[in-house]
Length: 129
Image 1 (tube, rainbow, N blue to C red):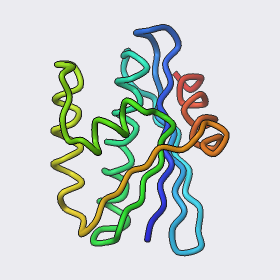
Image 2 (image 1 turned 135 degrees about the vertical axis):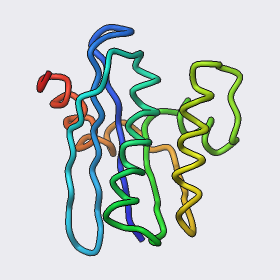
Image 3 (image 1 turned 90 degrees about the horizontal axis):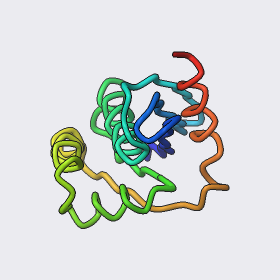
Image 4 (image 1 turned 30 degrees about the vertical axis):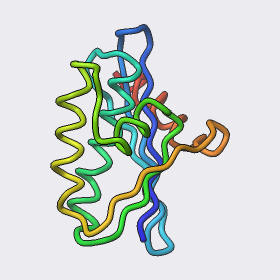
């Protein structure tokens, strides 16, 4: 099982944004700080999940994925597979599309203190711009 921590951050709302991805896989750690376009904090959180899924698709195709996020909005939207927010709809569709290529995809909410690595990487991604 691949364990993936994601976090999105934005400086301003909307503003410069970044995605932080921290992956534990087969005894190894993989870290990614990905600068994103100008977007809201919630959109950056969704985009972090999308970027992590893309990485997993390249590196860990066919594996079981267990994602963790400190964003209740993201976790609830993905778990319920629906949103009333029109700006989140295309993001949910993209997540659904990529996650569908894995045998199992789980996401659960974790407190911020358990998501420190991904948070630091998201902030680093903003500074890289």
